[in-house]
Image (tube, rainbow, N blue to C red; front, side):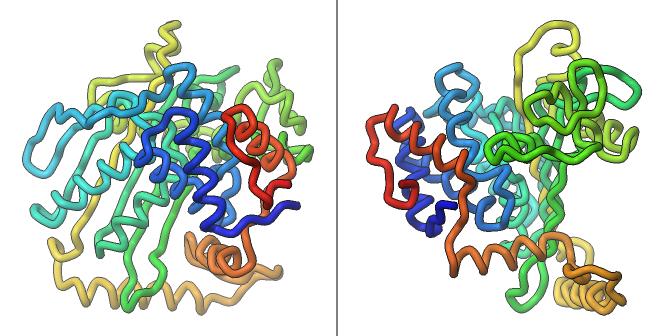
Length: 345
């Protein structure tokens, strides 16, 4: 299995995206997001996405060189239209705006209208946690997942992330989850690796559960009606609220394939003493870590903790890439006239 160092993989990803049409800044921001996911072991949201991101330029799902357009600002809230800019760029801008509003008003909400695929959204909430703020992110897109009780694709796998800072430079607590039984990227990774998928992940064209990643017609919602209900509400908050509905038009046959997001930042100082809040968060973290572990090798971990541990390991030992991912990246480099780096050969 090919192994890449964080810097060389980021540089190569940046070069690929720039050669495909992303501006230098867009390419760099997107590459950092993708490699961050690989570092944390979330390979389904890492550089395996690059061929698809290149295709999205060609099909105008992504528009490069866009400038954020302020649509509305009202107290601690704002809405920007990003003109289908790369998701990493749009959501980082929205996170920055939400953070600035939270520092001023206590809470900041930025609606991100007309973005593109935003990848592992825990990246953005982690940035806010780094500013000492609680970060909440959601994104919405076209249907990929079934609605509980119905056949076929009806809802997006709308993700949700919440990040909470901890004191003394400790890793934040980071929840980053999909409303589906599994992220689409994990099915893509199974295709790349040639492995079957577990039962309960997806259904085929007949609405029957399948273990063949190539036969997937729709992903199943997480926890049945709970997952589809949560996804529906994220569509309301991320899309309907900012005047850019996706699901209802799509189900009527208006397949615009749009993406939207939201960034919410909360300043603990608006609710009381920040030091006391952080101490209480640490007390909670300690109480969870002190739980008696069940049988198994993983032990008791906080949300996001395994990802930070994996990140430190991969920073030291390199990032493994599935053979299919390495092959696709090498092929993309050849098509774009770039040299194939040694770690892919």
